[in-house]
Image (cartoon, rainbow, N blue to C red; front, top):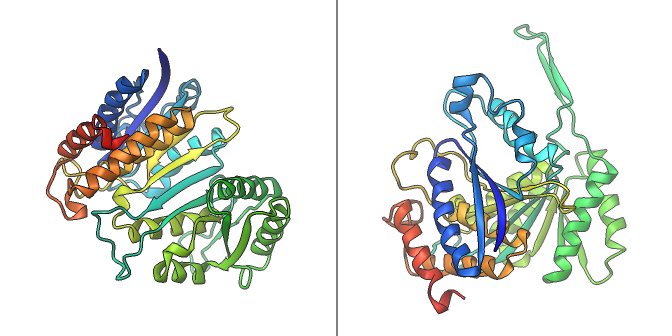
Length: 354
């Protein structure tokens, strides 16, 4: 029997509920498709920080390296500055394992009422550069507490970093509609964004069947609200991709349903899969967290592991359950996390979910 070693990090807040929910659904699905998931739970996060002074142990990255994939819940808790929690757990994993693609698909789901008055369906993917750009570690603070206090944060764009995420986006678009939209701001950011544009144009020359359209990111955000169906693959820098993927998730009806894969396309290292929602401490422990984002991220994980039939079956089951009205409160329903899992497991056993 095929066996995959999965390192699970529930993390904080509702991650403590959504990861066990995903484990339950995935184990049921694995039994239907003849493979097994071998789970290792890592109790890291802000509670671990409170006990030990660190978000994960010193050998945490080493212990994750042997996994076939990593399933992450959420990171962050009240009283812990976000830059401390994220830079203590999430970002080190992304960078140590060179997960340079943040793959964030989103599509409108029948049964979920989005905020747009135009109900036309859309299906797009944000490909976010995940290891450099605006989220660099270069910079610092001077003269703390004085009138001349200052902070400097440097954006770092390398040819390697931009080119490889661009190629990933073009390869993906070639399998979809053949359209790539590039998020830029070269009219205002004078060095890094023209550099981004130049490399995107160079890569585009190698893909004559893929159409590249650059958009200033502010205009792109406006177009997404007015007509998201015009887009298919959007490639963006670390900051722009982060913002745009939250926007597209909201356009689909809830950030609670949106998945993410932090991918090392070379497969030299494990990739990590997580929902893009936060730890939601206001609802943590109530049993009402939406597990869809976590479970959809798990579908991306299965696809990455080569279990494409199981991944497609799970994605279809998600659509069926949402369409049937089996929803948590964030989507206007009244079901608990466990009840949505029950509905998903039931849908997985039906021919209509195949």
